[in-house]
Image 1 (cartoon, rainbow, N blue to C red):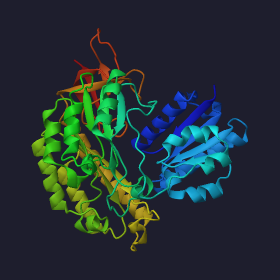
Image 2 (spheres, one colour):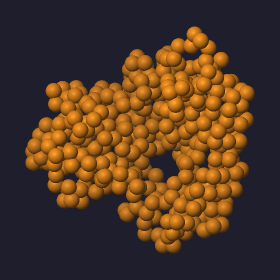
Image 3 (cartoon, rainbow, N blue to C red):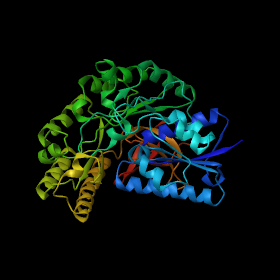
Image 4 (cartoon, rainbow, N blue to C red):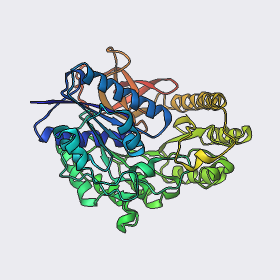
Length: 450
């Protein structure tokens, strides 16, 4: 049996693509290995979103081709977003790579692995990097999950039509297109039957789910139905857009016990000037009204967001407005990124670039402010008991267990470190337990199972 090793980079949406490719290869008789050193074929699923991600992808490709040069691997296949952005350049610069697969060609992974280079190149008929992309996996597509056994991503849509000036995703993923409702429900039931307890719904723009299919409030309907699946404990939604936070969506989160009280909503900035330049729209005041509306509808909700600093033309005044916005809203989880100047985006053509050192200094200042806010939010939880999803031995120490609150998404937010439990406690992954919080840190909490 031939072995295929995967290197999957980038976001959870890319991870699902890797799982789909691994599933197809396994169905075709290949063995999937965690070690690229042992593989006959190495597949690198790349990210091409920002400069640092592109550099990481190129480094991973070169490591794979080195294995081929050393005779450890016979083939190297490169897939993903970097291929969509730079296929011609990659083909010219990396002749040692045997096949390139775009995000719209995941169903070609077996051909890419089995056929020789010339034969595979002849079957690549799909237009790359444009609005004609149509590929969507469905409930019948083989999938080999790489996440923990108790949690799984479901990609509910692909592509994006938003005009954000800094973003290259539409050029790589194509136009927005939703999966069929029935397809998602069947996949969710299948995952539940496999023992999955948490479904994480993802897309480039989850809040628009069903819009292209003629559904009104499609995401709310989907949440309501997913929460009826007996074995599922939590339904989480990632990547929502601020202009599409409907009352129906908030009601679905508020009224379904299984819908986690969590909102992932990238805002990117709060200054009117920056939001306009980013082609996002809105103002600090309108965003603050949105946050209030969300919290009024779902009082216990945890809000996660992300911001970009150092965008072309960002002044100290713009940055100070962002600081005031964060201090006022007191978000539960915040990620801050420095602007990455990406060719092919409208922002690339803008002048008045902010020096990299200034952008990085602003990022650090913002994260220091958020750390204080996060600690204050966490300190309010001390002494209270919360429902926590148990996840086994802690990454911090073998002497601790760990889990997550509803308001903590795996890997990107904080966690709950568990240092005590009843003697008869059974450590089952994905089990919901009650934890009394005894200690607060900037991002993590410490508690005991009660």
